Length: 272
Image (cartoon, rainbow, N blue to C red; front, side, top):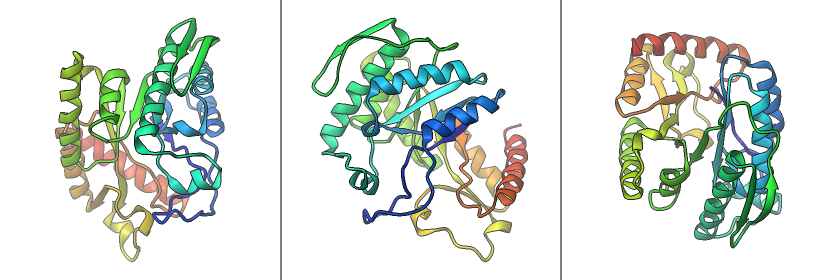
């Protein structure tokens, strides 16, 4: 699949407002979906506090009619401090944020599956809301985040897919947590697809370069191509259904195309 993040600016750990281009996720995904016909596209993930969930559901239904290769709606509770401050969006406490997020997911799920939705919660009130036209296919709902007590339980209850940045070892642990939540809720854990992402940093490109500080803690596929093949196999063994590889560490389109092309070959051989 092809996935786009939903941010208004780069992150800064200190909360400093940062400059730099950040395309609107909704508009950009519409443009991508109109051109890509053999792969699904998706949001990874929409920040819940940026938009009303009923509006998100209607947008997702529209995307479902545009995206011939399929569309997945990824949503998350929200976390990036600097953009919430700069845009005047209240981030709130973690508890409040997750309460609001759980209600939002219920609203979205209903609007994408029912002709009309009525929902009265503490944060959202929807009354007989339509969502038309309905998409051409069932839209998978992906929940992003790895908080073990609330976020992953919400995923176990309501998601078709779950995603978080993880190493293979962390993915195996988080997947086991998700399985336990599914067991508590009486849901088959096999019903939930698990995806994660890692940055590509092959040795031949990394030589003489450094990873930006803002991305230094993200998981990476790195080293020789043989080492990277082993890392792909480790992700598969940990239960990864889809491994997403952002191109953020490459400084040119040409470099991204070249090394991602090499990676696809290596990954295919590693999984053969």
